[in-house]
Length: 114
Length: 111
Image (cartoon, rainbow over all chains, first blue to last red):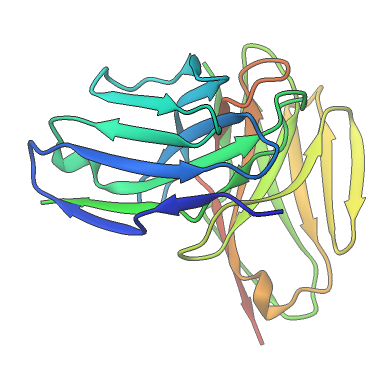
């Protein structure tokens, strides 16, 4: 059983650019969530995908978008990057039949916007 | 809305017991989870309480009091490797993976 993997591990972009982050879910998991974690803060929910459809979104602007593919891997896209987008982006997978209590997180992508 | 409060930092001695508290305010309650995160690492699930009482998993235990909107994580026989940040979290709805996290408690274990 493989865990949640994310790529790249680190990324540096400049303000106004676009970025795509990738995530491979844990084997057997069909739900993926994305979280943003600023330094010294807890993860903040961005959105969730189940069977390739977005089925939950946090308080993030539309320039944050995502995709889930038939193999349950996922992408997070951020357009028009802002300095405040600098953070650790975490992907988490879970089984849809769960009770919402347990997420399996990847180690994240550290994004720096200059 | 939902909000969670937990202490920002705790220091404890190796071999001792430490308790990390979490109080929450939610529009509906669907359980309280705890996650551990080492510096530069992924958050890792520790425990989940849906009902009042104590849940024990090895050296870690978690307690919930729904009437007090309060829970805690208890770590026994502290080891140096327990130095990490600990987060409490609540889901937005039944069966939801949309979690609201506290700001985390940084635990430092000293010799």
